[in-house]
Image 1: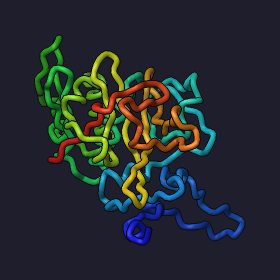
Image 2: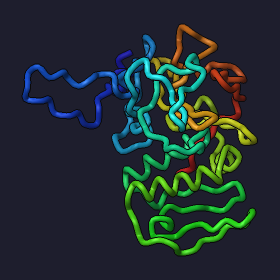
Image 3: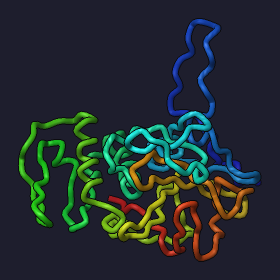
Length: 276
């Protein structure tokens, strides 16, 4: 067990707001981040993740207060509240676009944008056309006529988050599980890392993303999953319907078909973003 403790990460917020001078002020909540809210099961610990990594970003996703309900894009509550343990505190816009594959795309793109890795932000549309954020931020826009797509210069250069979100909503509109599944590379479940994706491409298909992972001293892994769904809705940390004792954690020893609350995947559906 000593060897395990050498590489276990303790969860701290990347930054915490300074306390108010007034001694009556409440202390900052201690469960506002994913890794604060969900401790690993007994005997497990989190492997350390570099503070600039995608794994660290996902592990430190902000959460809404306990008991919050998942909201749809139009402000209504998701009808089912029995599928998730927490709601990720990220806005999703007011269009019916931020669905399952879109949430995975959004998390990956947002991490890259916030760490200044603009050249690595690109996704393919369903017809295979590659949309690079670097071209978008330089004012390029994609012209769509039927199934034909092409670039044209339409806007001024812009580095704002609003422009980045416009880029994402365009990708959400014309990409999906089918295109994203082709961009990702297969990975063995035994080699699972934070940021890997269970995905079945199709209409509709589905995708969920590994947002945290822990190991025990034998190397056994458990993991947390998050998803969006249809209609467009906030990202949610999923319950484990197959093991209420372990939930919301999942064991990699799930057999051939990992079961999530709203979709059953196959063991071979685990994939990973390609390294640039």
